[in-house]
Amino acid sequence: MAAVSDHGLKRIVWKRIQDTIITDCRNSEVWKVLILDAFTTKLLSSCCKMSDLMSEKITIVEDLFKSREPVLEMKAIYFMTPTAKCVDAFIADFKPKPKYKAAYVYFTDYCPDDLFNKMRQACGKHIRVCKEINISFMPQEAQVFTCDNPGAFRSIYSPKSQDKMKTLETLANQLVTLCATLDEYPGIRYKKDGNMENAKVLAEMVDRKLAAHYQLDDSSKKKEKTQAQLLIVDRGFDPVTPILHELTYQAMAYDLIDIKNDTYKYKARDGLEKQALLNEDDMLWVNLRHQHIAEVSAQIPKMVKEISASKKQPDGKITVSNLAQMMKKMPAFRKQMTEKTIHLQLAEDCMKHFANNVEKLCKAEQDLAVGADVEGLKVKDPMRTLLPVLLNPYSKHDKIRAVLLYIFSLNGTTEENLNKLIEHVKIEEEPEYIQNWKELGVSILTTPSFFSRKPTRRERSQEERYNLSRWIPTIKDVMEDVVENKLDTKEWPHQSECPAAWNGSGAVSARQKHKASTQDDRRTGSRLIIFVIGGISFSEMRCAYEVTRAMKTCEVIIGSSHITTPTVLLDDIKALSKGPMESFTLEVETKA
Image (tube, rainbow, N blue to C red; front, top):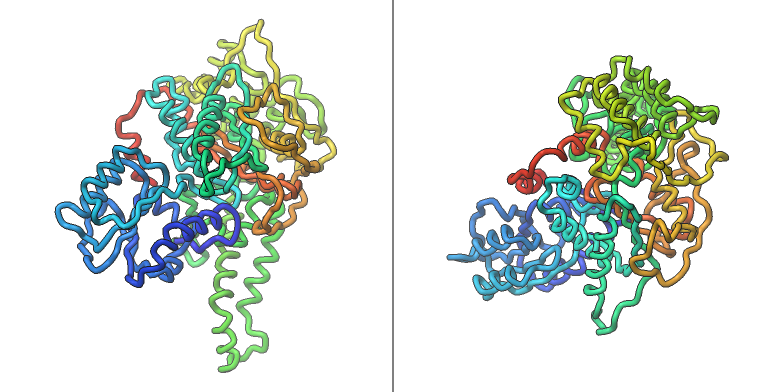
């Protein structure tokens, strides 16, 4: 399990768990067993480590669904999601014979009455505590959360989906638990879209459920709105950002390197296969992740010198005193050196991809996305920009990404032109990679009478940026506009009002001159929570930190059903045409 994070969402979640589950059990001197399902295992792993649990007299952590030997002298803490599968597994632990002395049951969210009654009737005499603690979201980073549900993309956007409303309802419940954990009762706004109703429907659900949740607090007084806003937006709101080649370290690494479950596998200098976890326990990763690869690469020679110098003995002699000193410093020293070695390797891997083909692709992608070249001259013929990409031997996914950027730049193309593009990329057998974007409300086909209107972007001509990183995610404009109280109420209607106006100063991009910030600074101002239906990209996650750092008066937290990468998103888009899969939910649970 991970170390307890000292800041942000992870710290808040761990404190909530301590104040509920741990506090209830502290009175007992008996050592306890903690029993988790897949979701709660992942949740606890994200915000605490085994030694934290041991200090609270929790000696064993078990899987709810695995066969376990009875330990009748121990009390069991069950931390699980309120599903029929979990409740049945719990009942099986006490019927026909109990496996534990007593049960302390904690649900991540509201437990339906039928499940609660079933559990009470089957083994009520063994249950000492039964509570709902309202944490059914996953704290990914200090300012990033997910609902840990990649399958929501298909459920919401597939024309063949049979559980769209149920999925939106689940997301709404998870957003309510996020607000409850943060002790916020936010005003809610959503992005109005003539083609898509998802954001509006989800905003209504969250508003209704929050009102019910906060109807009476512990002091029997209705909770008033807090200084927070929740913005809900559909993935189709900005189709450009999640498919661009991004050159900041974290986004670039997850796009180009095969990183699964935040684990980077690499071959060390000695030829051995190694792996490293990219999370907030690695402070070097925290400091580097939002920097441009040019800045990360500039630090590599310095790191090499530090590692080289660390291997040399100052006076050339090894004495008992020197060895004793080295041993004292060894754990911290070894951790620092390991981190530097990992990031040397990862940055090198990123740069190899960049040198091979990404650099050339980025030039065309940026011109198409921004609609202008490096000199600021408007791109009059996007096809001329796209053609070199189609004629070069780039991968299928890279060509699809460029074609999509071309189509997005025109707000759609003709059917004849689309068919030619599909032929060029050689995806005649799988045109869904492009055609299915229509399910997200994105224009792929247009007609001569079609009136296209692109969103107005913030003026950033004075901001100095890297030539291959000129595009700014649209969500950053939105974040800044909200904090400055400039967001258009026609495009972003209020589902429920926020009690007071927001104040803030203009944010600046951190792409060129990155300054390390202490994320654990407790912000005393407002909170802006952004929820993107259908996945967020790493560059959009970065924007939350940039705007928070620049505004100072407002903390921005961003979340989604899941975090996506360009390859994953394209594959998800393609799969929208497939029929419902009966085993789909089961597969998601198995991976969790």
